[in-house]
Length: 608
Image (cartoon, rainbow, N blue to C red; front, side, top):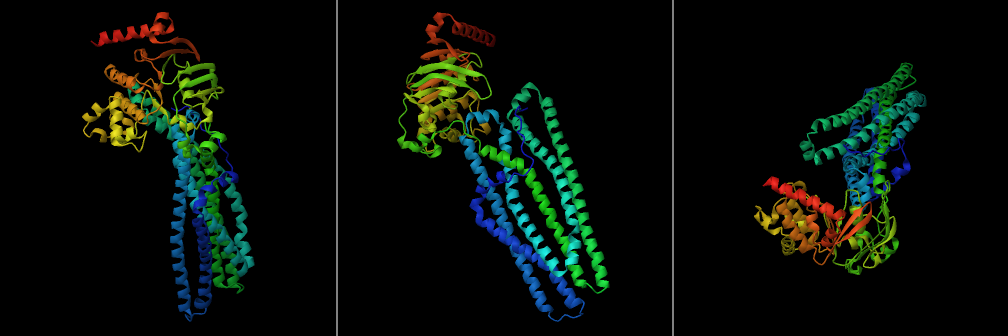
């Protein structure tokens, strides 16, 4: 299961954090104002109905007459129709705000995720990002839209009810409202308990989402290692905690609601008792008592709703902070103000002003350390000429991938500088370099869709002829044409309908289509069979011709034709030369190559 730890967030409502969400509500402000206006009207009409009941009792029932009832019925029906229309419009408005806000936040979130540096994904689990982008955002949009409905209606309703009760009978009004302070204290106590339980639920929910993601993505590994029972026990442990916290929250909620209802009924009972005595003594009208009973019942409904809103806001505080922490995450690698002024924003850069890239790369006294780790490179120097192929060899953790990631500007040097074509690459747009990169990973990632779609992903406006040309260049055309639908064949989720070698060829074609000046091959042939390796090796030789390239290789047989082979150990270059010169030295590379050659020979003999 994931080793990432969920961050702890504030338990109290932080209005400054909530204010940050207002910018996502601004595009829908006309619906917000419409909704607020409607809720005031709805609350006013709701508050009027008990007075109509009082009027009917005082003028029709007690006087035993129906004179003027036609006007009363007309007014009553008119208010009912207006209320029905209002409710329909406010449901539409609230729904528009809910879906619109969710869409806007997700759009900003996805845009932010495109810009965030590699370091963010190094320390943030995919499942937690998914939880932020789905359930957390949905929860917030619900509260913003429907919470606004309850908030405006509840506050307005309470104001109207208090005003009417005080106007009609001050004594009964004070009696009816006497239980409110007790209800406030009880609400505060229970909402804190409920909040604590729900915050635990939200926190565990992120872990469950992460566990689901890892379980699905690692299904094959789980089955091959037969660790289903172990994973199930871990997952059961997480869900058991979720169940415990959910039950605790439900228990507190189930206790709070009856107590709130009881206090409301006590207020109603006091009105009935004292008001009833008033009716008997002729000091209070019967219609007034009936109206007050209705008002006490109506009054405590918005009180409970407001308590629930504040409880929801408290429980959603963590969701707000999780989302805002993602949206406000500082981008480690981004263009400086000078570059932005000259070339424009990252995704709105003026590509016409971009200088051509040749491919000369120079590491000038480069030092690098990860934020929470030891130094990987220190005063590292390397000069790569345009069109040169550099192979990096060394043990795991020696710094090979770091060198490549720095060259690609996925990370930037802690000290020193990296020059592309003689210019510090921080003085050029980030996309200028990365749009000229072709990167092929050990485990290539394909997107759901057709082979054609996956190749075209590198250049969305590419013609079918360009796609086929790229596929032929990397020796992928023949196997593609053998498929039932050729280039229109579906690759499946993650490319699961193709073999690893076939996926690798598709990723090669995708990289080539963009015609990059710099190519990176990261263990590109380590997961494929010997037959496919020969096909891919031939493709590599053709593709890399004339391009600056870095090859990180486990199979040393694939790098014999490299212009230079660098043996990297503990962040330093310990041996350097082509294959022949390094073999003559009989150093680390020689021992590594001969041992691997012997192993491969033994495997061939065993297989035969």
